[in-house]
Length: 171
Image (cartoon, rainbow, N blue to C red; front, side):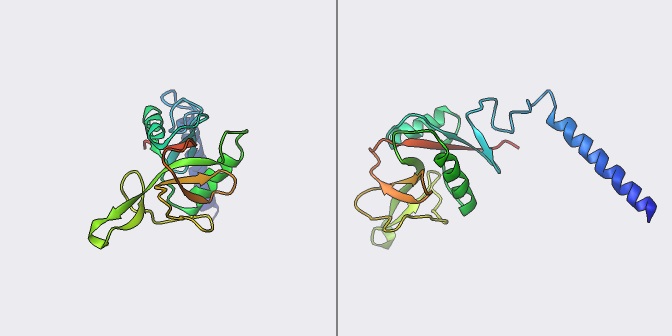
């Protein structure tokens, strides 16, 4: 029994020191965390997120995210939505309460032009967090997230809001 305990302690100690050595490796600065050396990107799980300080329409938002090395965010789970809303809510004063995501509506020509929501990579939106009364289907075709409560709203794509960009972490 005592030998098993000693073996366990040695294994834990070796594993810990190997992990410490990897995190202080000269090949990846400790502040990188897979998001690059730009500290404006914040990591959560397997993605990095960038929040713009400027407001822009959806077309400019897509370009901004591409120039930053990512794409407009696709919110795929309640925990991701909560984390993003928490970061947005903690921001200093910004011009708007809404932030652009990659979500937009698409028509299904096979199903009588039924509209449904998809993300920028053309995957159908699964998880949703719509505000009460949303989407209100009044010709607004882009999806924005409210910085105060994380609820979603359909908005006119030409409106100017801040932006949330996302890029997957390189493994």
